[in-house]
Length: 101
Image 1: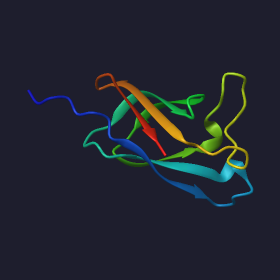
Image 2: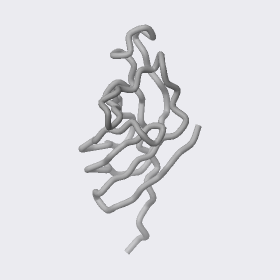
Image 3: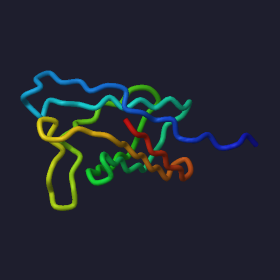
């Protein structure tokens, strides 16, 4: 059997219809693998988290405001800059990768 591929997922771009409206800002997360990842957790700056059931092959659009800290603070692009991104998935097998910007 072939060896397990490592997660190759990266923040490709930030798309904002309106930069002054944090609700309109999306991260484009690209899955460069040839298969989907499932049951994932994403983390920005080691503290803002969100779960994703599925990271499909290709581009996935994720609202930046959907990342939150334990205390409930949302990631507001006007206040914060992301400098690290972590992805951890359970399906089809466990893997984790961390990226720095």
